[in-house]
Length: 449
Image (cartoon, rainbow, N blue to C red; front, side, top):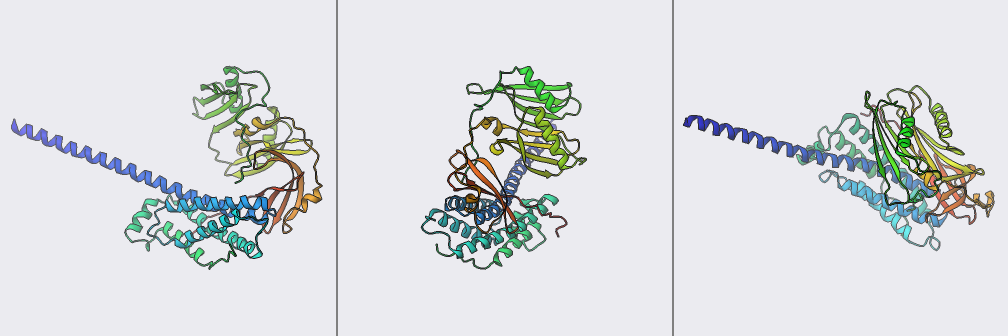
């Protein structure tokens, strides 16, 4: 009997040890997964910030007014600060990366010191402008190197925990793609030499918390479900969930979720109670093949908008991502583009059906406006543009300025070097209100060795 008791105790002990070991293993794995997720987030954030930094520096090159240049340089400083933070969150403490960090620090110091000084009294010198050009070129090189690393990380499912362990073991000289990639970035920056800097945020999106311009009667929950079904095209064999939102605010809306019982495809939509307008819509569906062109999809998007009583809209931007088309439409009134009234759409390029729709900006801002006559001519506005920019076309447009006011501007499309810009000159005062750098075609990082 004693033997049986001992065997039982030993069995329980072994089982307890095994369970404890299993728990320890699970907790260790959870910590490793959390660390890996943080490293991946920091790296992809860094890549994005360098992309943004390149664009922001390019934007400053096309600016001509001091009022626009100061906040633009402050934005460059902000982006470099965020990039610095992302670098600090990566396991690179044992890997020499000081040249790249020094490069970011110099851009930050230069942009900050220039942004806070009075540029009317002490404008950018020719030497400082040349320095900006050098920084723009150098940022492009760093951007391309990091994009190559990013491509390899995503393509081969590489783990940052392997980098940390390799560095801790002093094995960075071995075959590690991420370490090799960052060493390439470091060598690229080291090859610049010293940049001579010489001596020494503008939110364009108006946010209205209420849909104060909505018209029409309040709809019922059943009406909201019917509209969501029409958008989704899933038929009637669906599971439906509706949530009523907006209690206590000046507006309310229904959140509708539909799930096809057979395919399990899901669609989500928010619809205003007043008037029954779609705020946003999203269909979760994989698009594996392209059967229609981007142009055909844009035509279907226009048809969809007209069918749903969204009229007087111009196609502003279109882009293709994998097998999906993404479109931005803006309202027009009396031939003037009204950028606060914008609608974004995502279309499947296999069947031309809508996958995503966002009309929040449009619903918050759209109304009939009294558009004033310009105070200056288009030729006078053109004189305010940097002479180095070659202007290709122009039109009148309403945008939101840095103090959230709608302003009438002349919108100029122009090029500087290989880059294209939209430049907005206030049609009354001649102030350079905004400069946007358009995205260039993305390079393809395939078969990178």
